[in-house]
Image (cartoon, rainbow, N blue to C red; front, side, top):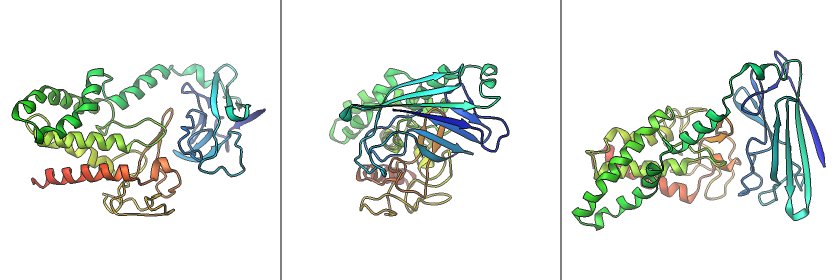
Length: 324
């Protein structure tokens, strides 16, 4: 089965063209064609397919052949088996497959218009640099030693109250290395935290980072300064891309988060202390958080695991700033 889709200019002032990041764009409009894959966790997710972004807001998503007229939570999603970008022809071709049904489909999206291919030749190739930057945003410096310390330090810090002074002294070099890891994010993004780039918004990784920073400061204040503990709090409560709303119910700078898909399964719940997954990165270069639509679970679902992390982070953060 094959579908052909033509991406045409919308109220044209310049036509859509295929750019070096492998999506179609013109002023005010971006068209992504399977730049992201379905993650297969919750299959009514709206995180893949053909996506149209108007002035920074994703307004349209679809394009895959689905098995039901209205896909539900556990319905199957197709697996993307191939994605080919033809700069010369200005096309993106995607092959999809349902293994369980031995069913294959192919989608070809083409930009039509006088400018469809002209601008591509005038731009530098950012693709490799973009891939490197994506990795850096997630890992800090990309240094394997930093990542190893970051994964294990929280557990080691948790053990300090049950260990002797010699154990705490042995951890000092690792905490010093972790302090370098913390500061490395200042060179990677304006917010100084590990921003998740997966197909589910990354507040869990951010909270884990915040918990580790807090306890590193509590046990080694001479190494990890007090200023570092505000990084994650700033992000959670409104200092992030897309909007300045908090990701936490009841607490926030400009506005606390008001709508969740909540622990009680309510459609528009707002349980005090609920924390949302937050900001979703849409490859290759778009962030979003639809604050008022809870059914995008990867952005707005409040979970027991996430709320537990927030309780640990929040209580330790409160103790630090109130000097308890």
